[in-house]
Length: 387
Ligand code: KIV
Ligand code: ZN
Image 1 (spheres, rainbow, N blue to C red):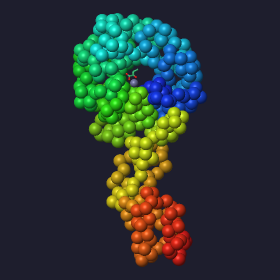
Image 2 (cartoon, helix red, strand yellow):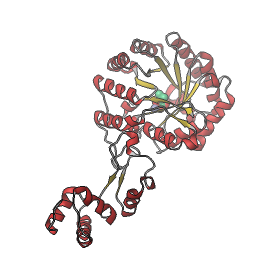
Image 3 (cartoon, rainbow, N blue to C red):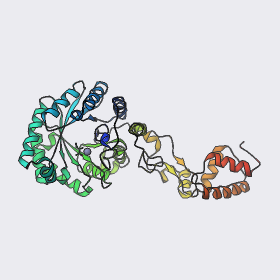
Image 4 (cartoon, rainbow, N blue to C red):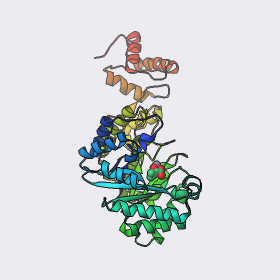
């Protein structure tokens, strides 16, 4: 099974979610939880952004021992110097350099031609390598860059000493087929590509970040970048737990897996949600409150007979407590009867029929029928209470 390296950027791209600002203590707590989760690489921040960001990377670097630590830097010496300072206590530091390569960014943002972009990136990689054994180079907006220029940039990055080349879908523009093809072209045409790791980094503007990341993995990338709960700029980044669970559940298809401690996923998701103040929607894949909840009668009946009928992942896999059979108007007799047994009631067939009819009447009026509603309903209508 091929190992896929996990690069977490919750503390950098994730913190770029509008309205999110984490304290140093919160960043350290999240980083230590990411270490327990077993991520390979943690991007702790962007040192040149502010003195506070630099300080928080330093604190994280003092405490995290079992993951590579990165700081983002633009291709300027002052950014690289700030990253050197921020990562000086890290056990396993890595510089993360970024420069945009697409025509739109070259013309309107950088006002640089291709040659200048190439020269600027090369100088920064060579300067970075004076201080770091590991340097990742990201070609920002790679998915909207001419593929032949991307091949030239990747070849230059390898010659200059980059150890990882990351090709991001910065604005969530790619489609899975196109994105996969881009990586196939890079792998087939760049000399020395086997000497470095290839990485992907996606955004979710069209809701395709997970699909694009998986397409990149299917086409040979070694590393994917993502955030917990998919938080990040605009519509967010690739949701780390979705990719990890897709690889775990469909390793038959991808032939690749992460080495994450999957049982830490739920706890990590709760912590990030609480500290960032960004709630997780109920229907969110993997970590949403409804991800393991079943309401309809047909589904509940299947679940009571065998969980694999309607669950492809168990809640225990991600460290969540257990599947829930939610009682509502779509629920069936089988689930209702199981709930009564759970609550300690023992009804004969006729009593069960009456109670079930009352429950359906109540469920038409009330979205979720809770244990206390059922107790009230039975204690009002039946003579016999729980045994
Ligand atoms: O989205 C992006 O391109 C980035 C880079 C810094 C990797 O966040
Ligand atoms: Zn990004």
